[in-house]
Image 1 (cartoon, each protein chain N blue to C red):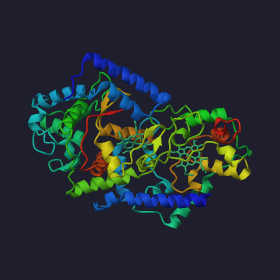
Image 2 (tube, each protein chain N blue to C red):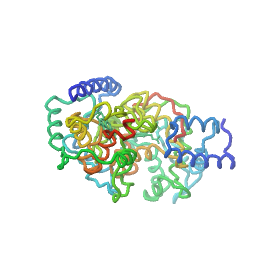
Image 3 (tube, rainbow over the protein chains, first blue to last red):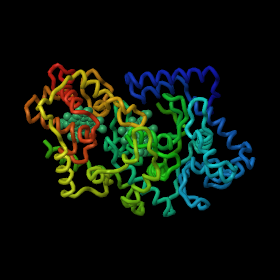
Image 4 (cartoon, each protein chain N blue to C red):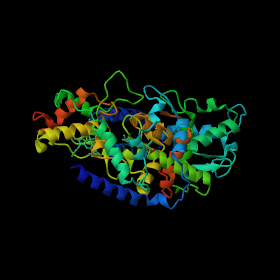
Length: 274
Length: 210
């Protein structure tokens, strides 16, 4: 079991963020070495715990105009209110929306249809920044932790799921922008790095599994908890493309592509990243 | 040289195709180029200097977006070579080399053209992201070959200067579907910036050649 994160240890984590941000400039040791050092210092601690705790409350407490708890109305694919193992079986097709959904888009559906929030209310501040916290990141932290240790079984029987996978694959190889980059530019060879950062080969089961199962994650350099939607839009930024919209078809298709390539892998999240 | 590179590319393509066996048994419905473009347009919004026109592809980008299960025909490869060879602009005054110190700064700079970057600042070349250059910089990436001692090993002959200028200006002229950005053709670096990184590669005083 994880130790509780004390105030003193939280402070140490804040210092860690400064160190990592600094060394990202100096680039003296590899990020993998640095993460290993934090593990040595902090053991099983992961500041994601703070998001998990808040997320658990958001899941269980009655909220919204309808004053109900997500735990009473939200079906993440395994039945209403079932949190355990649900994340390991996403994305999937939901017949009530007629769409393939990832965790975050499904949570928004539940907040809108179940709790009565408007969609803009549900997705405002979807990526938190300092004191402007994101409910969706907190909920993701809690729900992903409910799949920690579970093998992924991403459903793939529906034509909609296959179409999402195929779209994700086409987008993965789509080169555009000033730099001609696609996801494949950086993520289709094994054992390569950009500067000192090791690039997972996301077209293989091994590479996709290593990456997918360790997200969402606490990012030391930002001091924030981040989801796969965040990871993908930030790689698009580096790719010199415009802003990827939250919960957009391409965000979900790429998540489907990565999740299916990682299918069978065991979730080890919330993770810890540079 | 391009010949050797090219067989390398083919070898790489074969390896990639083998790797993607993983995805093959899934018999997914095809998503045609029009459907992909439509999904992209629905999924992005303009931000900062990155407008939705960044989603448009030129012919080279479109051809080089094929997944490894659909390799290019030799005609298509030839199209890429011709279009990108025609795109190269050599320096009008014949001066290929600038200041290696400026070149080192450009090679170190990873910003430029992202929506989060200031469009008023010149873009970097980020050569270290993919290449080893000066020995003293150990934080180099490995997507491209090592360029350490580039000038020392290859000399400063006109043909070598011209080949290298062309490589930096538009890598796909000599290596179709290269993952190296087309720095000149796509307006990432100015002519003077290219001179400066050229000097970084060729100047005997440059740390690359120490």
